[in-house]
Image (cartoon, rainbow, N blue to C red):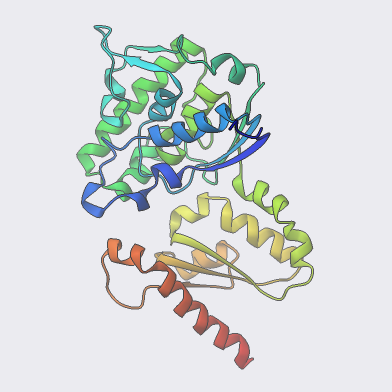
Length: 303
């Protein structure tokens, strides 16, 4: 039975290459890959998708998107012409990127298939604010691994500029999802868009805010990096226009009261009610979220 044509497709990177897919002792961004995300993109294209919305939060990877590209038919070769597995640990060893056997390359380059990446951080590809230094430690990287990955991303950016005449290093959001933002621009001819803007339009947020009294949102971690993101700030900016307060629920709350105010939040609450290992917290997220929401709700009822 043939597949039905699918004009638009929404893909969540975390569903294939997400941190939640790994046990705590399996996390190591030297070896995790965005290949599974590429398989989802390939499947969507094969089923006739003409526009792909790719959400890239929650990744376990730091491979610059080469895993995704490999799933689409790109090959990454070392100085001897041997194929490298598409992982972060091999970024610095890539001497040539071969896209000649990618069956989707022309369609993507000519926008016959268009890709929009939903990206809510503006980090560059490498450096102190880049993918490795800011996010790799959350994915299991030691300081030594961070330096290895950052060096690899620098080499990768130089190679992409030489072969494709694209300077991916300074693009805001290039460092998102372990550099998948940069990979999407390079291999998918993608546009990086603030995910919050796309989703606010999709759910008709302004229409909803005009009739509500409170907006509750959530994040895995609220800390100083949240000030660089667009999710909470986008929501609070819209909500302030309608004089609607915003409350955030999160796993780890590591922002100061001043930072909470700077984010535009009325309040923020961690759902963790006792010391707990991250792996256990992830498995109990639904229950912990329900309990915290109950307490927030009781506050509302008491007013």
